[in-house]
Image 1 (cartoon, rainbow, N blue to C red):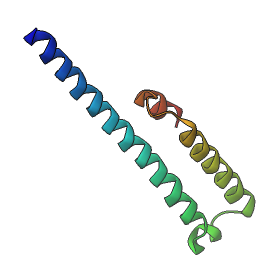
Image 2 (image 1 turned 180 degrees about the vertical axis):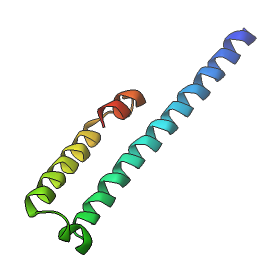
Image 3 (image 1 turned 90 degrees about the vertical axis):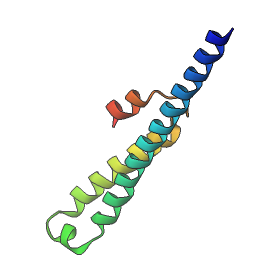
Length: 84
């Protein structure tokens, strides 16, 4: 019985760690999206890019953000890393 309890605790710890890492990855991607969207509005970026380029990048960022929101909390972390 003790082995079962220890294994269950170890499994729970592993699940919690994976949940934490998934949250961290999602937050990093979200931060990247927001940061890049903000940069697209900055003067230096506007000077070295065309409106069409900025619109295309903004569309991709929006797509990535929407996709990320659609992901369930139990989506494997590797799926999110590879997809983005």
